[in-house]
Length: 188
Image (tube, rainbow, N blue to C red; front, side, top):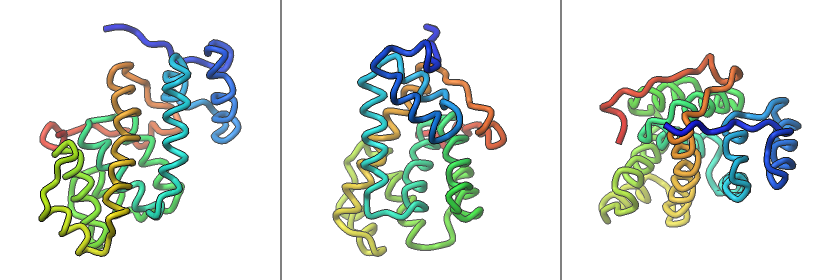
């Protein structure tokens, strides 16, 4: 397998350095995912821009994490599941929601469970949900806008999950306490 470099600010291509500086300022370290993406400045730019846009959706932080962690689980992304577990904890996502997302079990809140199920449908169907599945999501209290925003979150996870798969990104020490191992039955 090809070994990918996890760049530091100093080793990164010039066009990636400012993004890595910004990350270090925000997190006090450069996450390995971003250091890996730095090899392709356009990928790093695109990922960060899309992440910022996803944060502006009508979804709450909990709802955004449900979409992201559902995709992480289905895509078998060890790095992102550990990272987003940590992010969810810091953001105040309820422990039972995080546990359900990590273990592929239903979320007690019916509306949030409908979101988890719909995020799974979008991933597994590769964007071909049935009319019944879309209607069930909307009937749970979501909107057509939310349908499209789930696609946005899924797209964000394709970028990070696939990068981590190919580069075999090492989980950062900050996320290591939330290490996760996929169960083959949980991966799409």
